[in-house]
Image (tube, rainbow, N blue to C red; front, side):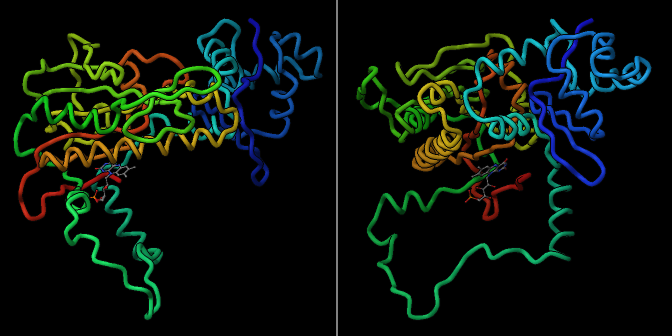
Length: 354
Ligand SMILES: Cc1cc2nc3c(=O)[nH]c(=O)nc-3n(C[C@H](O)[C@H](O)[C@H](O)COP(=O)(O)O)c2cc1C
């Protein structure tokens, strides 16, 4: 059986040990400098017998360490699914390894429950002072005009609130449509040296338009419960999953309040669109920033309809990709928003896990 060290390993030194991380599998383990040396020299397909001969390890020592290294995905077997995934990574990932480390290591994170998150904050507040959440200027600062006086747009923007309750089981198709258009709608076209570029309701780095929106509708009037792709090109919904409508909490890190929501919008980046033009890793930040622009526009459209859009970055990436049939390494669920008519309770916001 031929093996080699994984091509997606990152090492960082600690005291008397080296910590290794395979960012594609999110496996983290400690190892000795000798094992680092072994992995460094085992960079091409070879059997344990060949490695023992070439690098002076005894067969017994190798046999003792190899099963664990396979387990940690520090070693990869020729022809295995992991070997295939690494090939896809080296062929498709255009940004730096540190960027890949960041991107892949935050997939499918485990999230605390509300109770755990609150207990942690209370404990932390007991021994670490919180940083200021607002900075004030010294007396004598220049007072600006009242922003909300006679300004309908800002008054609408000031009404936006995250609310995790649903006073009604449904929203209307019009409400959903307006939120989708506000975030994703195509409103123009430009061109550059290599062709046409869509222009939309929100800015996009290089007009690369990396986002696609998907809708999980459980309570949208005139829309069969289902999973849909929103095509900004046609301003229409294409059904992508006929049978299975998952519980929304399964897609958003187990947040149970989300199951009462009539609708979830998922924003998934096609990283290759931006990667195609920009080789530098800063473009990864550009893609993330764009999600904020899209989400904010959707939230404001929701507010104008009397809805609340609750944003969430606590995503169950693998479940989302399976549901939507996104199987490329460069397909990346980034952000999501639930839509609902909020309860009018004076303290209705509900509690968040973040
Ligand atoms: C990037 C981002 C991620 C968020 N993720 C979550 C989340 O996972 N769960 C949740 O309940 N709220 C989430 N929120 C909502 C915040 O908790 C909320 O914005 C905050 O409490 C402030 O309230 P406001 O939106 O009403 O101003 C997120 C907000 C942002 C901007």
